[in-house]
Amino acid sequence: MTRTLHEVPPPTGPSQTLDPQAWDEIRAQGHRMLDDMIDYVADIRSCPVWRPIPDEVRARFRAGLPRQASDLADVYQEFADFIAPYATGNVHPGFMGWVHGGGTAVGMLAEMLAAGLNANLGGRDHIPIEVERQIVEWTRAMFGFPREASGIFVTGTSMANLMAVLVARTAVLGPTVRQQGVGGEGALLTAYASTAAHGCVKKAMDLAGLGSDALRSMRVDSSHRVDVAAIRAQIARDREIGLKPFLVVGSAGTVDIGAIDDLEALSKLCREEKLWFHVDGAYGALGVLSPALAPRLKGMENADSIALDFHKWGQVPYDAGFLIVRDGEQHRAAFAAQAAYLQRETRGLAAGSPWPCDLGPDLSRGFKALKTWFTLKTFGTDKLGAMIERSCALARYLEARVLEEPRLELLAPAQLNIVCFRYRAADADRINGEIVIDIQESGISAPSTTTLDGRLAIRAAIVNHRTDVGEIDALVKAVLDFGARRSCGDGGRSPSPVT
Ligand SMILES: Cc1ncc(COP(=O)(O)O)c(C=O)c1O
Image (tube, rainbow, N blue to C red; front, side):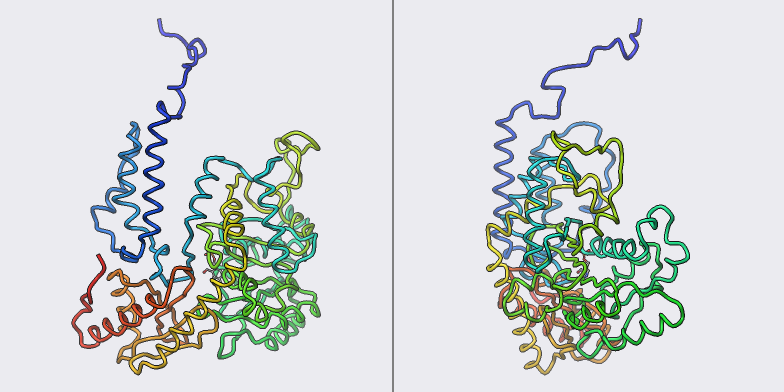
């Protein structure tokens, strides 16, 4: 006779859990994995920056659901053979594509500790949340924000910008917007950012229900700084036709060429026009840690909110985006929501309100604060500021190399840590696009491309703290070598690929 489910006693004992049967075995395996990853970072220069993924490697990751168990050692071997060698490459000092931080061994170790604690930072009363609050406090101090400011870790600046738009939207329309939607008044809201602002600002307007058309893309000067007078005039025109300006987004380091808007003038404009002033400081905001760069960010301290990434110039391993809001009450008003199962108490584990889940859309949240806390404490912000300054000095070195080389052309002044240039050639857009792919596939370096004034540029964003003069020289040499081959039409086959 078969027994019904409730008659079957639950299986018990250690073998019923997911814990190891032999802790010493996992300890030994763990030490091997840790040693290997430390070697990986220490020896990264001996690897190609990036390598193309063979079809058979990609095919391994189209396997069926693994219903049966495998040995950890075997699974780890797969990681070592087929995952680690085919990563993005941003740990490597030759990586200059897009705006990626390099991470550190310290951050890597902190991630392991965070995973061990398996803390959920949505809420409740535990020290991991105090660690996050400590970072909020340090960030507040960094930017000269008032005591009532609030902050929260998020995935990245795309999310932080979206949340800033939501806070600004709720501030202007009032909290009822959260029940009633943006309605007719919301349809009138308009925001302003430069044509050089990151695309995620437009997306944020879309996702916030305001529509991307409600973002005015304002012209920039030859250094890609927004024309503040043009914004002022546009605001007046928009008001005249019954629209409701509510938000200006300034850039502290544009994604294309590293331009910093006149944040002081923008903050004055917002004060006079009573608009929310948000700064997209994805990587540039941490420039405040450098005494040489901080004056160029003047005005950021007046922002209503700042989005930034500790995973870029802060070198914290991915991901560690952050949003700080001047008025914590307005921040909470945009996201806090009641639920019986999230009842707050004054003592016990449910104490410590407000919780981070009151400051953003996420309830379950990992412990991004720990790797940031370890990074800031272990290196100190002076050292991080010096690294940031050094990457700007390397950009100036690259700019000088481009200017002294007649076969190369500088496409924009290097204002921060990004250099946009190209190989002079007939059909230069196509040739330079090919050069960049050739270089990436060679493993020598990893620049990316962008388009400036309709011309394709090789873009080197120097963010990784490991990048040095040798990597800059290698990039220049690779551009010249591949450029010569592409120009004479031999298909760009490799000048000595890295193996
Ligand atoms: C200026 C700027 N804003 C926003 C972003 C998007 O940040 P994330 O990739 O962390 O979402 C970037 C990314 O490079 C950026 O440079």
